[in-house]
Image: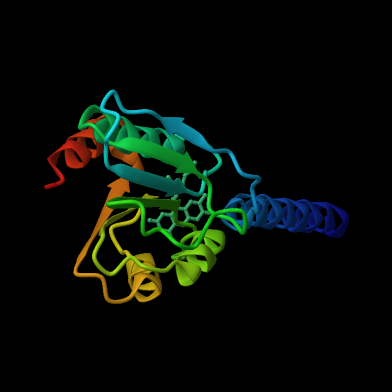
Length: 183
Ligand SMILES: Cc1cc2nc3c(=O)[nH]c(=O)nc-3n(C[C@H](O)[C@H](O)[C@H](O)COP(=O)(O)O)c2cc1C
């Protein structure tokens, strides 16, 4: 009897350790320092304004898909759009962009550390339109305060959280939001 109990306890212990390791692995996606992956969507208009979409990818394609919806909407609106991951390779001077979009997943109430580190470096954005989107599953959003603090005093700064359960609606909403940004 004692032997069976020991085996059960051992099994529970190992399962718990595996669960914790998997969680740590998932959460680490937000701290991954990705290499530059610049994509530029050119505008048909040679004198077009510029926009940039900077996103930290999550485990699945959910954040990437949202980022590309924003990029597509802005490009359809006539902007030349640069898309990339956050990182040291990105210029901190964003003065040439009229619209800036940041995207991140949230794990345990925390947005991407790499994105926040980048936002802390950016310059010349006080007169820009900034949209920060978050992909998450919880109605509580402490992560918004972390991003807000990093962005600082930008008058035209907007925050949107997309709940993972509404995938298709989110993609439509992201596109519609990007094309509705006032010039
Ligand atoms: C370990 C873990 C922790 C999470 N913590 C939060 C959280 O604190 N707030 C939230 O809104 N969503 C949370 N989520 C949901 C993720 O943010 C959501 O799945 C998001 O879309 C990330 O994309 P992914 O599914 O590709 O990882 C968590 C998910 C996991 C797996």
